[in-house]
Image (tube, rainbow, N blue to C red; front, side, top):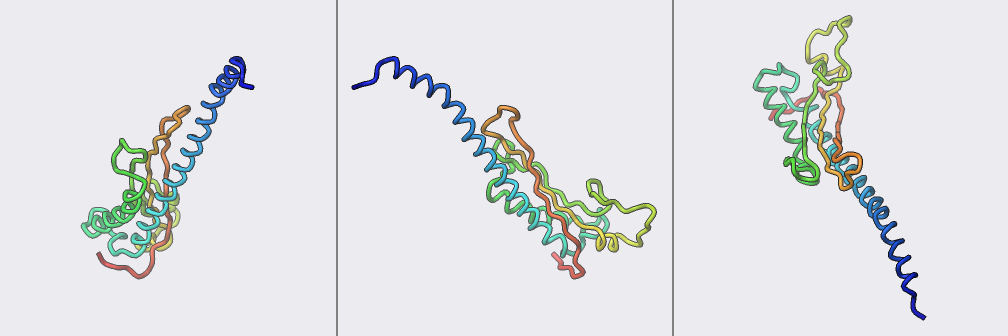
Length: 169
């Protein structure tokens, strides 16, 4: 026998009550997966930039010198090449937009270990050997389920020490 109109009405009501919850859960898992993928891509890009930063000549020079600016630009370009060719865009209207890419040297703002004033250092090159370089990328990810927030800022970073051998650009 067929269903009565009451049974069909109850089934429709159950669907109307559960479908939004199921969709919210599915979209939340998609958001989580996208955020994890963007985090991985940013970390990989930062690692690529750091691989160049620890070996390139000029990175331990004066911040106003042309050698340093050339080296810093090369490191930033290397760090952003992989993320912008995959999941992250430079456009602010996309699902994941690159916000910043930075190379942080020891003693600079944003570095967790600043040189101690009680422990003098003889040159910036010696500081670069004892303290790590940091390459940091940040991106804004637009969420599919903007219940609490419309977007999240995801960061990928890599930390490494300067090598004794350097390559020129």
